[in-house]
Image 1 (cartoon, rainbow, N blue to C red):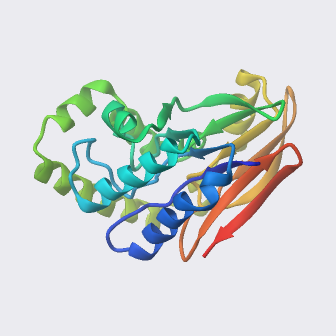
Image 2: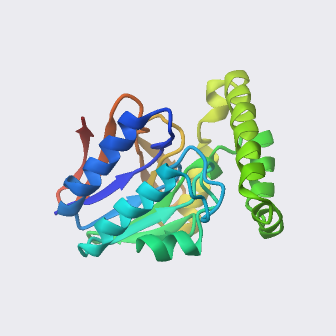
Length: 239
């Protein structure tokens, strides 16, 4: 059985169709995997593990059902759901991974990232990312009541959309130097990440050798899973 990778679902109330595709996936194909890696932005927003919104509760329940069958599941923070924490992990059985993390996939060391740390040309975003990932900022934010956190998240989404519309395509993508640097730092030849919404296979000439980089598809009109096995890497579309 292959190992599954998904990223950038951006689950939200306004897209119940994608939420249902995800839940059907967890009840079906995901159970025939060696394990499931969710590499960030599972949710459009996540304001804390105490979120009692129906979508948050349903997602926790479906993930718990998957892990209860014995299928391991891992989660890596994205730029939208970096506040997923210990309580979520305990409620779902999903293990939270550091970004980045190296895993051994069928005797091939592979570096997993969400991908936003590779977009180093987008300096305004990197500054905001550094602030939002700090323990002090997160503690102060989570101390606020849920309505205030939800209002902040909505305002942040609007600013993000404005920034995306104004930034150039190249700035929003990964930089060659960042990819080569992280590959060399971890001594790996294969990278898997999401974030950029540009699903493809890329090759990079790093100082430690030729590096293969796979970008996981985001979920728009349908879902897509990256399948990794001893025989290679492929994609599966979910409808």
